[in-house]
Picture 1 (spheres, rainbow, N blue to C red):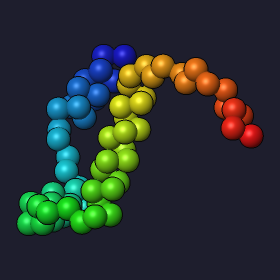
Picture 2 (cartoon, helix red, strand yellow):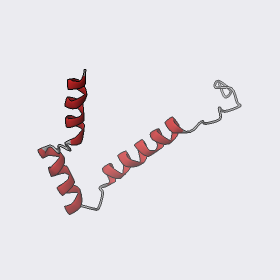
Picture 3 (cartoon, rainbow, N blue to C red):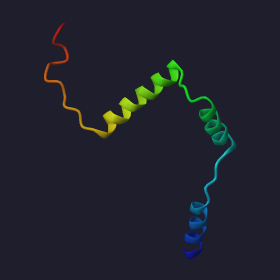
Amino acid sequence: MKLLKKLFAKLKSKQFVSEIDKFCEEFDQTHPKKSAAQQFEIDKYARIHYLRDHEVAPDKKKIWEGF
């Protein structure tokens, strides 16, 4: 058990960064302006994360009210 704890401690202490992560970071730094598609995705996921993390009051009208 102690051996596993030591092994996991070593694995956690290393901060491995893959080549693709390095590439993406460098690309983001050299291309700071986001395209319209990128900004759309950023906004979409910001909304998704907000709705996930905050309670939203349900609508009081019925779903089929206009039919």
